[in-house]
Amino acid sequence: MLLTSLALTTFRNFNSASLTPSPSLSIIVGKNGSGKSSLLESIHYLGFGRSFRTNKHQSVIQRESNAFTIFAQCENEEGDVSKIGLTRSLSEQFQCSINGEHSNRLSDLVSLLPVQLFTPQSTDLVIGSPSERRRFCDWGLFHVEQSYAGLMKQYAKVLKNRNALLKVGITQSNDKEQIAYWDQQLCILGDRIDLLRKSYVERLIPLFNRTCEQFLPEFSVEISYYKGWEKDRSLNESLLNKMAYDLKIGHTSVGPHKADLRFKVNSVQAQELLSRGQLRMAVAALQLSQTKLFTQETQRHGIFLLDDIGAELDADKRERFIDGLIETGTQVFVTAIEQEQLEFVNKYKDKKMFHVEHGNVSEE
Ligand SMILES: Nc1ncnc2c1ncn2[C@@H]1O[C@H](COP(=O)(O)OP(=O)(O)OP(=O)(O)O)[C@@H](O)[C@H]1O
Image (tube, rainbow, N blue to C red):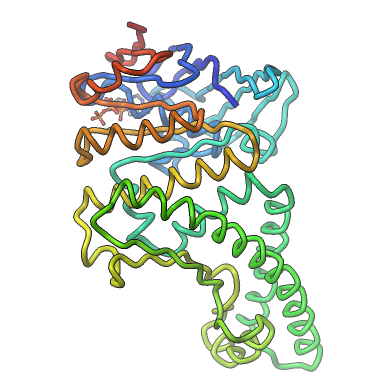
């Protein structure tokens, strides 16, 4: 899916702005506070229904305004055009529209635009909590496996019910029946999620290994999948084994909601050995391999947002990352403070350069 036009109204410091991006590489240059990240943030909203900087939608609405609006036109790989819109008001009301049809279901919008993001904070993907890495795998599976989003929703519902029961405790005989019922449901759904994730990571690993050979040739980087419960036990056995503990803490301590993608560099934790720039390269390798897998398996193209690319990635590494993304046919948006940070982009055809100043965007 290509983003062919973007228009914002009362979004951060943009009162009204529009741009026609390049199908390949769009470079957004401007001084601190000019609005570069806000432009990327608006595309992120279309891909996730939320910002990457705040959970408070109100902060994104321009001061003194009641709502922000984002309109975009997209074109899929068959050349079909979709017009999409998203608006969010101070009263938290959210509405999206696809080709004139209004919807309150964010998933309709989000499944259209496969957006990924790389920022200076992205090292959290390697050194942050397991939830970051689960979210990463879930993004890939959401766009590759049609059944995945529904499965995850059902699992979350069952987990919520099981946790509610654990919280009040199992005192009566019908509580025992109920927990047995939720356990059975959790196992059916959990095993299906695990199977999809395991297979996804198995497909990702060879691509990741090859990318790491280029991005971090001096290290041996390994990723492995942890399913969220003990290796040699079924989920059912693990739930039974942890029952007393789960009752004590009031929630379920094992299951796919505890899964992780584990990183080892030269057999130790990544943060023990890698510099910040090298950690960023590990993240870049992971995201690039996911992009390659997505393109291979869906024959679709994604959108990749690179915020502040100059931060702690040297010129050679920036170039390798952007080259890799462009080779997959991904539409790339890059922000930088200085044009000099991106001198190597002269070699790309089909690129467009945008200048942002005080909430105004102009194409060079
Ligand atoms: N709700 C809002 N209403 C109006 N202006 C806002 C709002 N939220 C943020 N701003 C302003 O919008 C401007 C754009 O911020 P943004 O983070 O997009 O800039 P940037 O070009 O990415 O800067 P940097 O290079 O420093 O990261 C800032 O000056 C900020 O103070």
